[in-house]
Structure formats: C-alpha cells, structure tokens
Length: 295
Image (cartoon, rainbow, N blue to C red; front, side, top):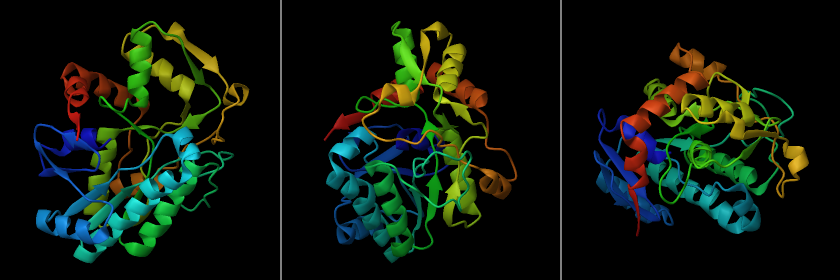
C-alpha cells in the first residue's frame, strides 16, 4: 500500500518512504531505513528528516501467520506502532495510523466508528491493541480503518494482483460469496486521507469504498474490467471451506462520517477498477514489481 500511496503523492509532495526490512527504489520518492524498534532512535531519525506528516502502514497482515506467531504479530502490529506514536508525539508530527476493517465479529453490516470491536483472531486483536496504544501515546493521531487494494510488489502480492495473475494463467479461483467488504483503491484512500488530515481530524475514521460487495462479486468485477474469463471465478463459502482461523463474514464499514467531512462520495468499485486498469497501462504494476529489493 505504501508504494501506491507514494506513487499517488510524489508529484505534489516530497515523499520519503521509511523502510524497515526492504530497500525501495521508486522514482520521485526518497527511501530511508528507519529503526522502528527504538522510539528514541526513531525520534532522532524523524527529527533529522523533519516530515510534516507520517503515514504508518507497516505491519504483519497475513492472518494465518499471525495466528501461528502471536508474539511476532503483537510486536509488528502493536509494538512498532506504539514506537512510531511515541516518536511523532515527541516531535509534534501529525500521525496517520492505517488500521483494518477486520476488528469486528462480522454479524453486522457497515459498522460505524462507534461500533465496539470484537476481534475474532490474533491479527484483529493485535491491530486493536495498536489502536489503543496509539491513542494513549499520541492522542492527535488519525486512525484509519479501511480495506484497500492496488498493485503489489515482488515480495508481497496484493489481493487484486492474485486475482488478475490467477485468471491470466487460466487458473480457477474459488471466491467466497458469504464474505463482504467495502474496498477502496489505495490511491483513493491516499487522497481522502490527505484531505481529511487537512481538516485537522483525529481519532478513528472509516475510509472505505461506498459499495458493499462479496469477495466473489469483486473478483467477477475484476475479471470483467481486465478482460479475463470470469467463468474461472467459482462461487465458494467460507463456512464450507473450514478455515483454520476464525474470520468475520462481514467486514463492511460505514463511511458516512468520512464522506461528510470531505463533502463527496469516496467511490465505487467499477471506478476504482477503471483506475487500476489505467495504472497498469501506464506501467505502475511493472514499476512497483521491481521497486522493492532485499536489504
């Protein structure tokens, strides 16, 4: 997500990509290795860089991996986030923390910012812990709950990448028709977030797409826009698949508050997919595929 964010903002802002494990070579953005393990060392680094805004998007997001390695998940998702919050608060830098739509039990649709979280797994629990620690360490933080998609890189394929690559190779994919979300394109998320920050907003905010749909319907829409065989998208059910980790059936978020702040809708899936398609034609997918290197 950070790479797509940088691509969207690099022509209108000075962008510094703070890396933790990989090197990044992206035109129009400076890449700097940051020490997220120590709030004191991170404070000194940020003081030297002097940013006006920090977007914290790093974390351990593979749900099964978090379940298998709960201590690592807590460290990556909550501990490092706390360090970033401490450092930015010390320096008076505005912080945006990217959270998740995975925090709830999934029995209600389009949950608002006031809905009490009810995490079902380790990933969700550690992301909720991150939110709580951020609020304590840096109360002026904007905490963004969302579910985004965009182009991935060599070491991390995105959800939409996987759908496109699978269908292009002729593989059948089973997509759940009983799991719902409100996806937003990473570029649209970036623009909306910067606009909200300009209004000096803090606290929890849902920045998600206007449209609630199933993972199956999303994959079909992707196939249609990219001219791929949608017959390869097979209907499936999360319950019948017997997942190894409990997950919510409905992750959809109510974006009424964000839409009201911005005075505009946040966008629908077909609009996002049209932009994603244009990005590939313009070379972004290839650029990002080659942008991330091993340290």
